[in-house]
Amino acid sequence: MAKIVFWSPFKEAVGCTHVAVAVSSLMGITHKSTCLLMHSNFGTKKIEACYTLYNDLKNGDMISESSLGISSVARLLKSNKLTPDAIQNYAKPVLKGRLDVLYGTESDSSENKDILKDLPFIIKKANDIYDAVFIDLTKTTDEEYVKEILADADLVITVVNQDYIKIDEYFEKYINIDILKNKTKLLVIGDYESKSKYNTSNLKFKYRYKDTIFAVPHNYIFADACNDGNVLDFLYKNINADSKDYNGFFITQTSNIVEKIVEITKIKE
Image (cartoon, rainbow, N blue to C red; front, side, top):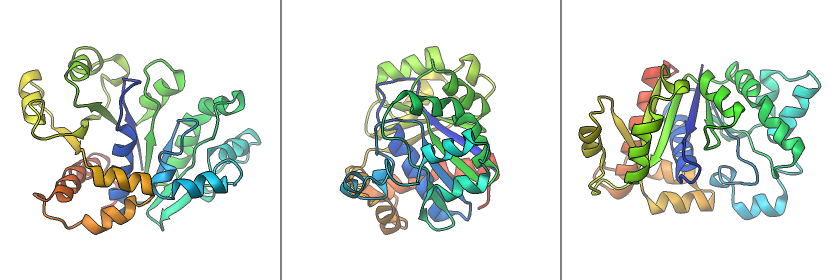
């Protein structure tokens, strides 16, 4: 059982959530492991809307009024009734027996902010029942709950945009910060363009980086699928696409991350 965190040190970074969605969804489709996808972001339905039409989420108040989500889990924790099974009961199954999504909260009220303090414990509880817990973590290095979750992660997947200034800052400032120094981690370039001069091969050479630099390519069809609640349909439709195909390249590159996670964490294939 593994706790896998998707994170970026840059608050303005984009694409981290799409990387988390693509990797966890593909893991659910291609492997027998039971997975949970959750996040620590308030006031957004970005992950939830990848699997359910946004208008249905908005008009149906599925997050704010239903029993699904982390707020309900936190209430159980406050009353000392939280069990691993309960977390599964409050998560939405999007791939039966393979992938559940734990909805976030609608606002950043003081009550909801208190949930963040409990998030590391909730993740540990979820890890007792799921083979893999994927966390789309707040993009910062300042918050204590972020530091605690990073420190307890089995694998940290750092997502950086294909922006030379940010990439250079990552290698200069963040790659060996104390909290990550002895941590198993992967570097992923999000929204990736292979024809850019800042492709993974050139970056490895420039920074003398011995490990693999992974990538999740820019793909407008996948982005549309995220907006339309059709991520799983997109992945199933293109799962066997040729790697030279536009969608096939996206699947192949994302699959490389999935297989590396399986190799590192030893979760079920």
